[in-house]
Image 1: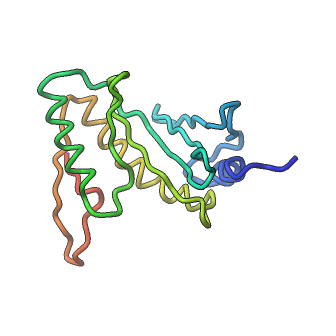
Image 2: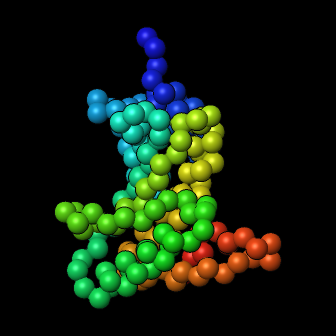
Length: 157
């Protein structure tokens, strides 16, 4: 049986030290929900043209009010930082959830590259998730390091 691109990526990803799961496989909807030891879950799927890998993670429920407005303001600032951003923050109106997601081109992509990317993606996701769980708003700074590059995510709690 011929494996799909998603099956190959998941198999390779499962062999990395970041995920280390031998049973990563797409479900009948061609997506894979990866549970992590800390309780976070990452969803991985292909776009409809199978040219990009979509990665997403739910960060938490955001109820209406001043806190949500402040959090959205910080999310907009974070989304406007220069690359690499390691994910885009988005809000689901129907679910009241903040989500971190990104799209990776399948061109020359393999499980090892996905795992490397996920390390940074998960760091950002955990920062935002912890802030939300604590009722805090991450402080966004566009401070540049001495090399003229943006510090990791520009976030400080």
